[in-house]
Image 1 (cartoon, rainbow, N blue to C red):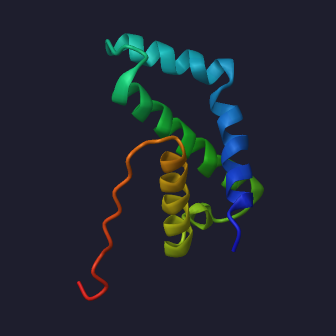
Image 2 (image 1 turned 135 degrees about the vertical axis):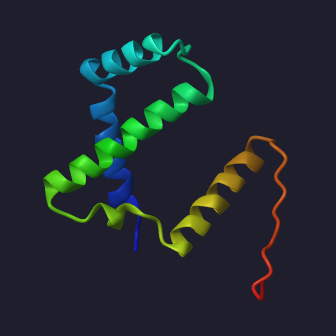
Image 3 (image 1 turned 90 degrees about the vertical axis):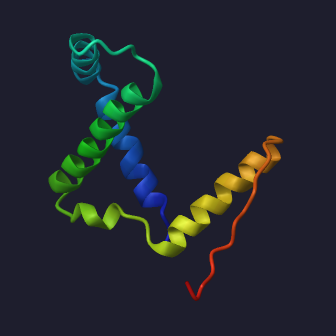
Length: 102
């Protein structure tokens, strides 16, 4: 199954979290807890908001949000695509093949 619809869904959810209301609340929260708007904590807060937006949108559209999860073959394909893009950019990539009997 193609993941194009999943990407479209995620992109639409991203538009929601980039809205000034959501951005304002995120900035206020980070300021209240003393976090700079950079680094892993800021990334994590936005990641939670992104997933919440995707789940809320799935509910609004009437489908099970678990359908957004990648299958094993989708995840493998995505990882290989990321690795290929890194190689094309000159970034060293080391692949470790899992033992199928493990």
